[in-house]
Length: 49
Image (tube, rainbow, N blue to C red; front, side):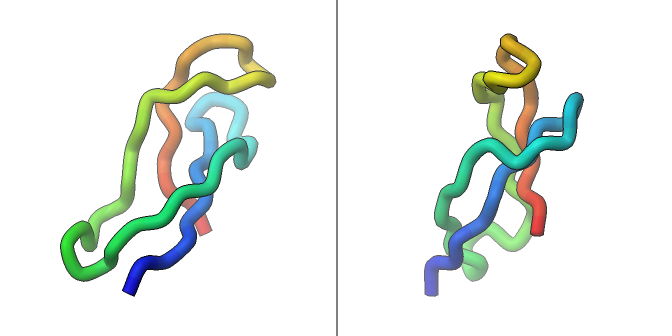
């Protein structure tokens, strides 16, 4: 039931992280504040395809 999703930085649009999520319990897109090594700051990372 858990699917692998990638997280992309909202500022530079690069895909930095992968994680898993359960589509039944969280149908909306995931958003985390994580470190982007390209921006060199903590930015919001949203779920992308």
